[in-house]
Image 1: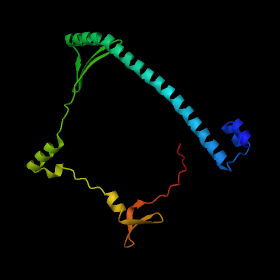
Image 2: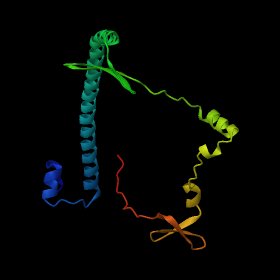
Image 3: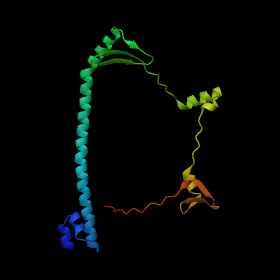
Image 4: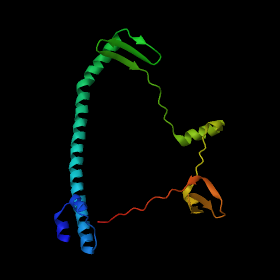
Length: 176
């Protein structure tokens, strides 16, 4: 079976009922896995390089689009300012057969320094506008409890609600 295993690929080995029964076959399997891993990593590397190349091309296309259209956009903006246009609460528009020129009103951006902002609210007495976040400290709790079936239990035997234990299967792995 050893000679046969060395000549067959993984799919063919599965078909003939191959099993590992000694250290030599186990060693062969590890070498085979390493070869497959190296092949996979090589192929992934080639693909990642292609992805990188395409991402660079996409970036170039975007830059080219921006450089080719910025002048026209600025000219359309100047034209927009010179013609009567429809005005609403949120924007101004001017329709043309091939599209609409729009000036959208932006809401202001609020840049907050959280610590200073918090102090200001406290000084104003606006405590109702301050959130307090309570969160269990799982690392601390975990040291004080035990597992009983699918429940988490205190040293006194009390079940802690809100936590369920879900067993997970062991994972077989190999190191190369």
